[in-house]
Length: 395
Length: 144
Image (cartoon, rainbow over all chains, first blue to last red):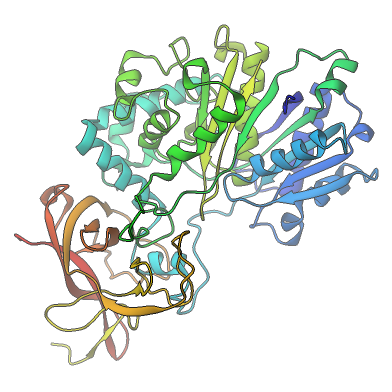
């Protein structure tokens, strides 16, 4: 029995630093997705929201907040918080509801309004909070991205030019995306001239935080067929597995890794474990994938993800990049939306936005960004405290 | 010359003196190490122990990776004025099979670091208060 659901509609509010209430972005995205699906709001019987932690109580109960803003019509609601994977968890909740036969059509939506400047932890003396500890010692988010980037340089021979080439590639894709916040093309010289933040990463290697919203209308395959959309793209897999002890890569916000000293325990990389379950669930392999949206918190991290998704052997992602394979028109285009490089991170919306891009690509509606003949797409993202996700969408 | 007293920036996380060591715990059942200390539950999925002993971790290890902070981090970091950029190291401890982050000792930049080089623990000032010098662990190349 298939566990697929149909994606009937995708919609987004443009990313930016608008400073409006997050609800406004979520409603705009939801209405765009409803319109795209051609489904009346009253037909939606489940509203699954990604929570935001930055916008007070309405953000903690985002599913209900969006449902009320769109006009209460008696649907059931859910709110999921899973850091950067919140949108995928919200989608998983909707899929469960649909596959259990409890509803036919669901709205999945996430939106955020981000504060200006650094995201700092609460004050005081709180050594029991790893996030407080690392900031007290001077360790910020780019520290972690830079440690991984340096490993790539040392182990695989990646260069600063490779990292800059990721930015140039994603900026070129984002320049063709009206929903992206940054739509300017850059040269390798532009990247090299930007300020060093955390050696070897420069300002233009690291993503910003943004306001934005994204939404999907999903349904049972049966419902899709009944309304004449039997050929809509399908969600073929959702993986939200935790890491496996012992994690051998130091992850934000921790100051140390797990210890793998006990008998029978091996150190693992967390990112690599996420897509394995997704491929198994979809019954396909990395060779079947035509397009990927990955969480490029830094340029170098995009290269890590390409290997974690097994789109290249470990250490060879930069070779794909240099050959142009990961650009639009290449063998396996990555971040055709422009990625976080052009969007900036809007946490509860980001995983959903990745699926919006895949949906448009698989329908052949991505305009100047269109990847010819794309049939299977995969997403990957990672957040704090063991949250991450990988979703596979099939035409 | 300051006559302020030296005090650990975070109480109980490392020993004081010339040969400082991080203080962690070790599961009495499976032998998993924890830093920061874990005294309540073992995180090894195959172990349900709640017995831990306090242990001093290895003083030296191998450089896993490194970077620096070119810009002043936000509070609770207390920055000197003007801000002095500093390097940051992730060091792998052989016996404990774990990697620990920390600042690199003052005056050592990323150009002096190389993955795989031996590093050792030292104590240096993190910041000063009105009456104390708050020290913390930092990593320093053994050869430097």
